[in-house]
Image 1 (cartoon, rainbow, N blue to C red):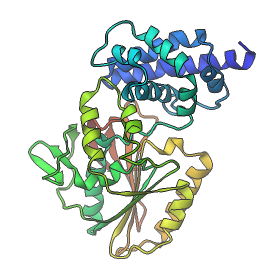
Image 2 (spheres, rainbow, N blue to C red):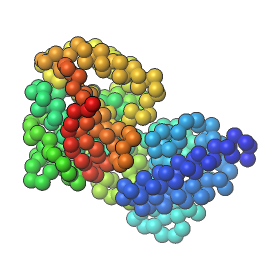
Image 3 (spheres, one colour):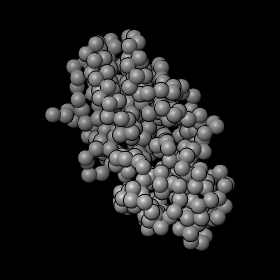
Image 4 (cartoon, one colour):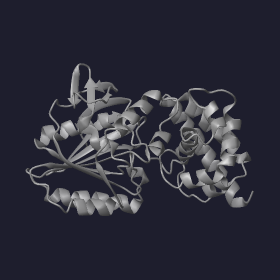
Length: 351
């Protein structure tokens, strides 16, 4: 191999091993095994995708480019589409035969497909995160006392823009739509959000490559880990419910135009879940500046909220934060599992 390719291998192998640890911690032994197997065989592969990955700069791991999950999503897509029956036999629920020989064969046969697949970041649109959004929206409504206008950055197919149409159950209490076909029951600890009615008057999202939930549902399902059948079932239900509009565009530019419009009589709630890390640093800065400028214009009859559920320096899961204008109230709402499988709710003012 050439020097640039060999020099890139340790970074990807490290990223795969790091992702394996995350997958194991998130309850997916199959994905942990797949990640470790890819880490072992990657240096031995002589494929176009190896050379392509070598040209990708920056953090390849879970908090950066997420190359391990891109690879895993492409492999799962081959299984779901029926293109790789040998690989499907080694995947859940069958899991017959040796996994890694089947993976290596599929990668060799579908090298070009996988090269194309990894061009796009993971688009899980994990509906389990809507449990966090329901709780966060309840906190916003309790403080603002108004209906909501929703704007989601990195919205993918818009499944989480529908969070108010889902139900969140904590003990015997239910937030959201009590009659929803999709009920979220995360392992909940700490405080509970205010039990208020969440009235959404308008909703729209943006994504660089928005997905059509009908024609591109397979791509979304491909990023659900194969041995997590509950997540798969939840995704399929949500795909049948989504009606939200998602615009194609740059998040920062879209947000600037979106917040230039009036939203009097409602609270404009801007949010993103495990998406901010994929925005370029310049876009992150523009988003922050846009929110702060719009916040300075916010009033009691037209407040502005900014909710983020993102990876941070915390020991586990994602941090959940809220900024609310006027007044620029800054709250840490707690932490949650990346798939919304657990929530530790502890609203407190940030220093």
